[in-house]
Length: 170
Figure 1 (tube, rainbow, N blue to C red):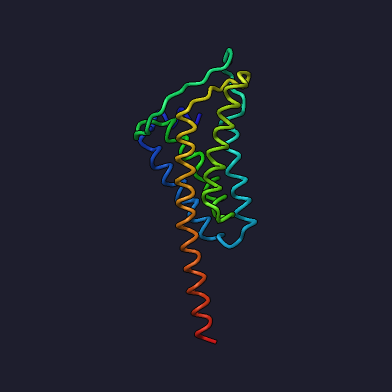
Figure 2: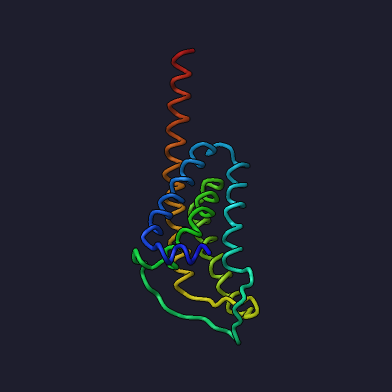
């Protein structure tokens, strides 16, 4: 249903990615210093990842089917851009929670590779692996990590200005 809507309104996909990024940034800004909440948001943001990649479909695939290709997304490439949006929130919240951007990036790319491998090895779930999916998931993880770095810097500035203001008034 979501895919059909996005295919019918492909111009909205970049807007959806922007909205996902803005919602993540707003939540991250509010909860940047509350690690448990940020971890909970990271966990919740993984639910759509697993639902949209590993839940069986009505399609049946005979044998291992994996497409090896690499394409850069364009504004009309709904599936590619949707894969970017899918991995942005978990990478964002995990990077914010851990303050380890490279580890988070490696974990995001690794998780996507595991998902694509499972799709290839479990034809009963009716999903096929595609290297483009892995690449776009990794691009989403990169964007999430970069956004988390920016949010972390803003939160640091906010806490430094708050502590220096408090010290001056004491």
